[in-house]
Length: 290
Image 1 (cartoon, rainbow, N blue to C red):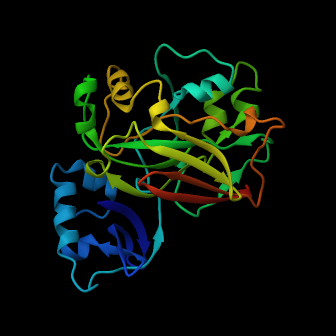
Image 2: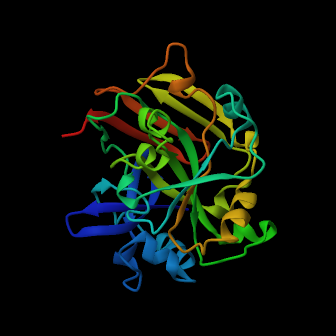
Image 3: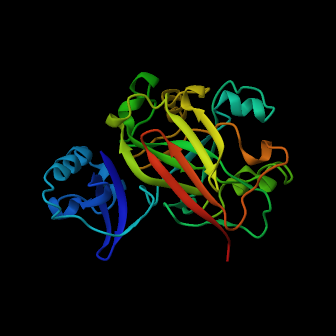
């Protein structure tokens, strides 16, 4: 099942995404089952949330509950945005860095999160803003000290993510300012929707690619992960309680702009697409911050 957050004339709604006659349609689940919450994050906090949403979607008939609106990020305000650096063997190689012996972790603030078609805004104080396509796992239930063998049972689903990075701040400032380089406003696009975990046979075997103005810049497969999603969750949960709606960016493949010769950085007017097998396409234009 595909679930999305849609801004409608009546407010934000959790919708099921369906294809009918070649058209993408959105089913207002709350209109079918008024016990369902209005946000996807709230839906995930309920033990029966996804099953009830699935039941409501199956009860849609003859297009009676189709609703129009603007897609937002699936999780609009995640409690945690946790990111993993250097998690593809081929990306570590192009960066000239050693393969890490354990996951390299950092975070972004929640105001970095934007949805499909929203602008990535380039700060006036950065001239080297880079792109990074990433698979994102969305946590479905609270847990700590989670064993890798149990990790997938804590994942609600997956979505496309874009870890936008200001390299001249992340790397070029004194001491390396990872926080400031990674967390400017709009630097974590998510979407277009959440694909529930039951639809993804193996998240560690997914093709991933990024296109910049129609040109493929990154293309790899999550089988190149240094640390699987299960290992990442085990590692994080030793120290951090993971909660429903937390999002985990799992690292980016090779082809990033700073590694190219000459380097390629995002410019106003660019359009970036992140595509992962089975998860749709996340598209965002680029503009100068006001």
